[in-house]
Length: 428
Image 1 (tube, helix red, strand yellow):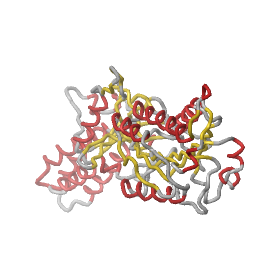
Image 2 (cartoon, rainbow, N blue to C red):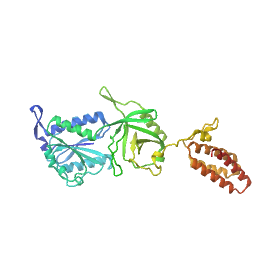
Image 3 (cartoon, helix red, strand yellow):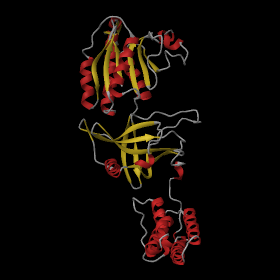
Image 4 (cartoon, helix red, strand yellow):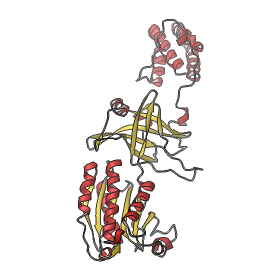
């Protein structure tokens, strides 16, 4: 987030305040700034925020920083803002865009809150494009906003397409400035708080940045993140690879205020973070009826974070298929020999590779001298396929074994393959 403040000479104009006092337009902006910074400090302490002041030129007052105490350091600099010359919004936006790209790259979503007076003198061409969002906190009247470039230009024009909202401070009072900031917070800085749940384990969490409502051509209705994020299961990170994502959020613990301090409590989120990092695994989560995401660990600049990445609603990952099918089919224990036999504990190794096991089975079955090893391995493959409910694959393996016996060039090999078929066919 970038707070961009107009400090041109026109902001020194005086206006009547409550109780007959006289204040300047810049003083009202300082009041609005402090209210927004206080909210960020107590609700979104991880939000990287910078303060820029502009008139004819644009200068950085406080570079990008985050943390509860850092926001109050920015407040101290707000009081030191003074007046300069004319207003140049074009130069200010270009300076901010360059600073954001140098710090975070060109793809990071950034919100810019422009504190200025109405009407706003917009640049002739679009300086900002997606993923930037510009919110104007305008000092003036509703009539002045109606006559401005923002209200008069078409909604799809290049000069205004990056402007999301205009909040008018009218009348010029402390209460009006506070009300405009409250509307800005409700629309674009509302903090998300919910619950991360996996079976009987759960933990209150918050997301940074807060998720926005998703819309799209294929979505009949807009969708919002639910209050409860349910973990469905786990996949190796290499299996999931890099699917297209709609948004990414840092999964933070819910903050509890204790004696005016923000305290983090150890919880299930911490346990899940360590487990995903250690096992190089991702957790598949359900966000809606046909909406999924995944929780994963990521390391940047030697710091590890747990992230929630949301997939586009209704998206299909080609190499995984329909995500709703990523569950074990319902199995009846009496129909599977591996569950009905006495004193038989069936286990699937975490590193089990079905394809490799089947290839090994055929290598052993094709060697008459490895008959007993082939029989034992056939039993293991049979149990694995039965446990996972892969009956069609088991039937195909059985047909291939029959074909191998028919092609046997010696009677010993035919007998050995027959013993393997007999063992494997026990679960068919």
